[in-house]
Structures are given as C-alpha cells and as structure tokens.
Length: 167
Image (cartoon, rainbow, N blue to C red):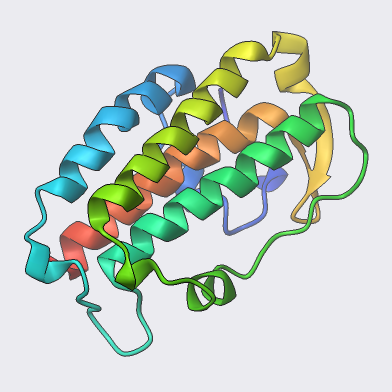
C-alpha cells in the first residue's frame, strides 16, 4: 500500500510510515513479537511511568488493546458500506477509566492476543473490494484497509516509546 500523506489526518502519518507493504504478515508477526517483547520487561518496570501524567507499561498494553478493538470496528463499518462518520476517541480518558495497573500483565497480553486474532480474522474475511471501500473516519475519507496498517504502526510506535523511555 502506498500512502499519500495528504489523504490521512496528521496523527496517522507517523504510524503509517512504520508499516511495510504486507499488512497481513505484520499483523500475524506482531501476534508473537509484541507479547514476547512485553514479557521480557522486568516486572518492576511494568508500573513505571517515565514522567508525571504518562502511562505505565501495563496501561500502554491495555491502551493498545482498546485501540485495536476500536480501529477494527471502524474498518468493519467502512468495509460494510456504513456511511456513518466514525469519530476518534480520547485515549487518555479511556486509560483513566481503567484498572490496567491492578491487572496481571499476562492477562493484559492474553486479551491483546485475543483481540489481534480477531483483527486478523476480520482482515482475512474481507475481499479486496471491501478493503478498498471508503468511509469517513477522524474527519477524513479513508479505506477500510488503512485501519489495519494503523494497527501495525500503532504497536510499532509504542514499542519504540517503551524502548526509548521506559527501559
């Protein structure tokens, strides 16, 4: 997939630039690599936030799962020709409303794995025509497939942040 930057909201661009052309392969690879990466983080780091108001690693993992759920729903709506505009969401309010820090990291990762498997199943179930359907999301016209690339880039982005600021 070749991206034309002007076709996406500015917050999408850093995520999309992290993606290769084969989104399905990357979705499947992250099913193994992301949980493995998180499981290798020492337990004492999981509730660490690198600055006031920043999330812990537990919260990042929970946020990634929430985001994937929401973006898969947007992709489905677009693929099904639902013309209702899809709003964004306030990720900070979502994290504040959770108990991610009281949950076991293995449970959080298992939940991510379940959600990612569902995203992969959804992607595989969609025809090329359905993936290329256009809908409104985040105030712009985008195709359904874009959201799967976003999922991949979003995980890569958070892995980089964890490596740079938490470890």
